Image 1 (cartoon, rainbow, N blue to C red):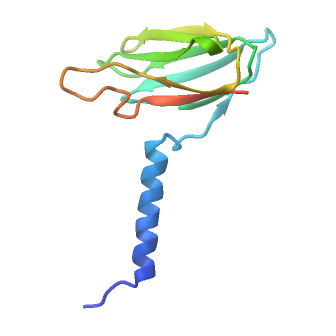
Image 2 (tube, helix red, strand yellow):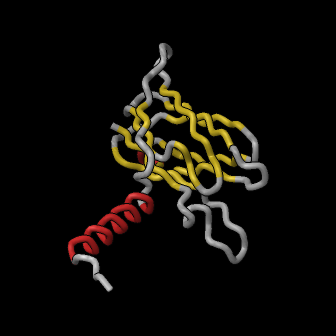
Length: 140
């Protein structure tokens, strides 16, 4: 029986570790940058689906209003969009029932990285956030 070279095994392990890392921290998707409309509002659309947001990385500018359109693609499972950063002018806790579309608005007052997530949870199961339903808002 022929054994695999050590280098081949090391590369396989390295690829598996990096893949798991990228998926676990939400780097699987590309960031989406908001461009202010003629009225100065930064508008973005986010899909809420089975335990993920798409996109899960948003980039906006400080001091300009942000309007997020939240579209739920699920047929049964309700989700929400939670971002609680009052010092930065961001306080959102929006329920989004299965199949619904809702809009939320806020104006970020300070730059930084802020996490958004779904905090729904069924009894005895992991929360949606624990299953990976979170993302990052980058304000610059």
